[in-house]
Amino acid sequence: MNGQTRISWVQVRDKIRTRILDRVYSPGDKLPRDEDIAVELGCARTTVHRAMQDLVQAGLVERKRKGGTQVRIDPLTRATFDIPITRREIEQRGSKYDYQLISSILEDPPTPVLARLGVQQRSLLLHVKALHLADNRPYIFEDRWINTRSTPDILSIDLKCESANEWLVRNKPYTHVDVRFYAINAEDETANYLSTNAGDALLVIERTTWFAQDPITTVQAVAAPGYQLTSLV
Image 1: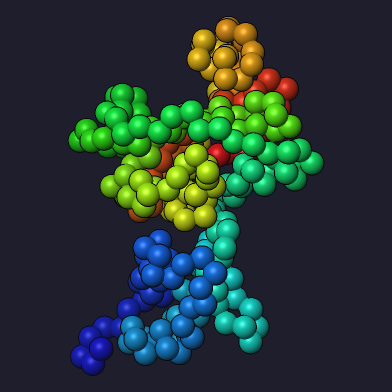
Image 2 (image 1 turned 45 degrees about the vertical axis):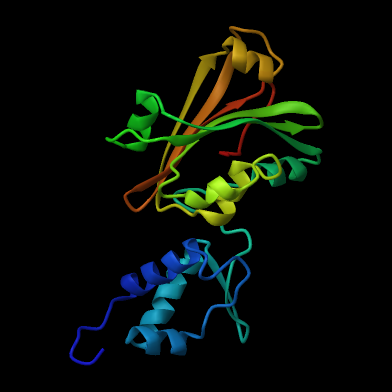
């Protein structure tokens, strides 16, 4: 990069993060040495080191002494909290996990969904409804919309076998998030899936994530009665 201003650690971080999100570096892959990245990008090794520190703190990579840098198998997507994989949360409770895909359809989202995502122009989004179970009992009813423009790979995933929650946590880290907690009175559909009565009060966790300015997903997770959720699906 002769005659050009050297790039900052933030630019290095963003380049590496983009490669991880684009699966140039897949989960479990070992990254090039800091020295090699520095030569490629025309910056100092200390600049790459600083960028890697931020990626470690973001939960995207892990560094081992004399072992190099590796993309995490299960990235910890962080904002002010970590988003766990629901399957693991249930298993850590000592319960048996199961998952049922209810529907997965490309459709025109309603206005409130567009508002949550901050999208002005209408386009088809992937609408996923699913049920997470603990010991064969309903645990979370998930009503999710996914922006396929920012997350096109989701269309090739068999969501009957892998939940959108697990795939997104593993493959689509976010840069910022909006979370809301509130209660609702169960409508017929929700009551049916959660094996409760219509009109019962239920806890809802609503979460929307973005990478930079691109919306990724918005989800309403409704907890079955009797569970105290830590999962944010």
